[in-house]
Image (cartoon, rainbow, N blue to C red; front, side, top):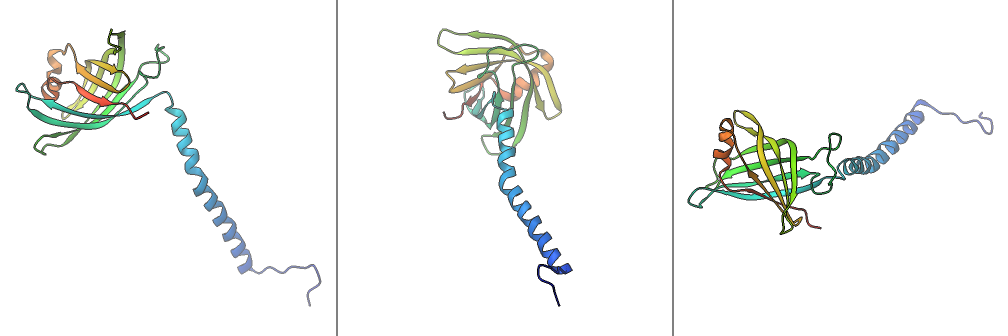
Length: 185
């Protein structure tokens, strides 16, 4: 006979209690951890603007040859004090496909190095520098670029002063600037 106040637990009851505790911990971890992860990513990139690339490249006869889409990320438009410990940053991933729907592929723009910033009379801010572009046979480094911020609505990326060993990029991207848009505010 059991005495009052004594509890007898068999192994099945212990297993059920343990599983209930584990399930409760797992439920709360799944419910709240994604919020913490998202917050950490947002805080890390708070000084960066992320936008879209929506552009076409044209040939010498002004015919559309390539359609471009993708994303760009930069701190150029949220910061004005750049130095060795806080460098200007710009990167992009660009999907290209011929206007006829063939030859789809991807490029990455990286390793941006800011060399000059200026303001034009029309309110456009111009950022000059060099960057790397991934190509079919490997990256091409030190490509001179001009990025124009047009009233925090669009950006324009243009190749400027290309060296002879970088002509593959000019030939591939053509003579028209790559256009990107800022996120809706």
